[in-house]
Length: 257
Image 1 (cartoon, helix red, strand yellow):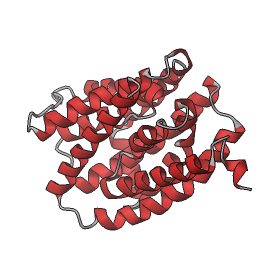
Image 2 (image 1 turned 120 degrees about the vertical axis):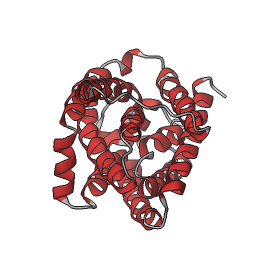
Image 3 (image 1 turned 90 degrees about the vertical axis):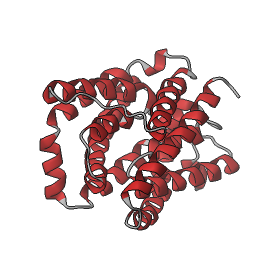
Image 4 (image 1 turned 135 degrees about the vertical axis):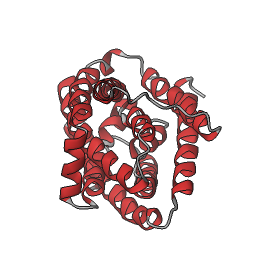
């Protein structure tokens, strides 16, 4: 029975994938992001990157819907209207970026994702502020969406450019979590559509993704309990520390260590 969801993985690898996914859901519930980063970083260590990318699709979709709607549908719709420029440009370029994945060396998406993550998070921890100029807010939103889309299409993660924008706008903790939920959910739909077209999605890999959705949701609900108890300063610090560790692990994998 379980073999139908294993996508050719050994029982030990399947158990490891479930554990990685639960941890990713737990962190996402607590901090509002990082599920795809942790899953790609963890899963790509013992399976092909393309299978890892498909595996995170349904966990991303379901956890993002939950996160987006946690403060109600009206609040989620308000965030959608507020950031419509960013969302439109991100969706278009996520689809475009996804078409390049099959032409890249397997290690390149890991390096593309890991390097910028480490640099951004370390600078933030050292209190070197990276902030976008919001004097021309509409133009900045369009550009942020384009960068996030291209970045996400090949790496499976489009959150960091959006987070830089939200930090630049001094977005509060609960607002950031909700907005990221909207951005991630809409982006996930574009990501799935893009890779349906790119050809990496198969029936076995989607069954694998459906199985991983269960530990992802269990971890998410546990993480919500943690999020409600984190103050803003700890929330920010743990977010940045997690980005550094995840980025270093991705760079390690990209050079074959």
